[in-house]
Image (cartoon, rainbow, N blue to C red; front, side, top):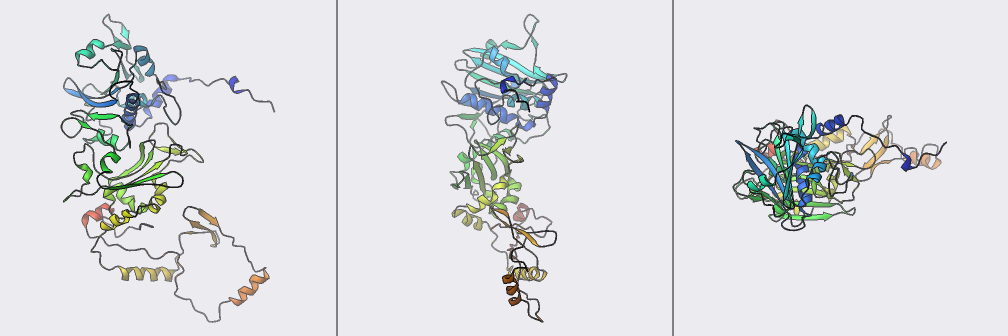
Length: 492
């Protein structure tokens, strides 16, 4: 066999239809990733500001009778040449590109499907403000070519005078992105996706709250009037910043370096709301999620979390209890192309789910947590011992086999399952009749003539504990409306 060429002798693949590749990359991107990408760009720029504040401001700008959403940040500005270059797909400035870090296409790709009319970038560098507008015309995405004062078409403009007239501070470098949406009259503060999908009133603060678990030290994020549900300007605070100090919290590290964060957000007096709702621009619901590199993935909240919570050892009180499993930065996972979820690096590279860690969450619960869980359990449930005893007798009489056993086609035990170890093979041929010692033992243990079936249980599992619910809110929370019961394995 001929020796293959050296790596340097490989002819690199090229793109035959560049316009199709660009359009398909943009239009396949989930729309709701837009804010994540724009905010991450602002964050990465602000934290390397050489002087002055490290800040991000979320603004509502007036354009005629409508408002457009603006994300403004301090940090290194861009010249007209840099701004022109950074608008290309897979292009970035001052960042190392890699599958685990910066892709160089996130903000542009995620934003253009919802801003075909226009996505305006302005950047101030050393007192000179440059502007470019991206958009889509006739199925082609790119920089919009607009006429200058002499009627010639240009892509990048010097808008320093216009920015100064609007009150912009040119003493420090900054960059701003404005979402013009798909229509000139679209209010992108309240309707960023042009109704597809529709969003609630506090969508922006909630999105950031349920995506970014921590912010870099020294970075401030401020929501200006009109961009949140309260009055005035408000600073953004993350889940740990808001909820951890209010109730009880603890972080547990396991042997592999995973950190499991447990925290209890107690209800406000006389209400069912969590205490963290006070003065907050975001919602107050409890959550369960994965944390990787300070971002949240596979988030469960509200009713979805309360239904799943018993699997994590939280059968009651999940409305006020949150659990977050933080993966080490070198954990063998990787964000998928659009950063919507994580994938395992090895084997079939399946999607990483928080449920993969439910056993760890249950096993590492702090000693104080079961006490809180029990405090939310129904108190007037009535006696269920008689029902449970009858169920146990029924299971015994039917000889229901344990679900932890796997059988082969002949019905013989093939493997036994143990949590954390998976299925372990059972040697069913060991000690067959050909073995003389086993043969003698079989004679000794032969069933006596006339023996009858005993009533002793052959089940590996006992009948489940039964908890009666009478409160309408609890019935609704557990998803039992119109149902007789729901079974949770190993909930306690």
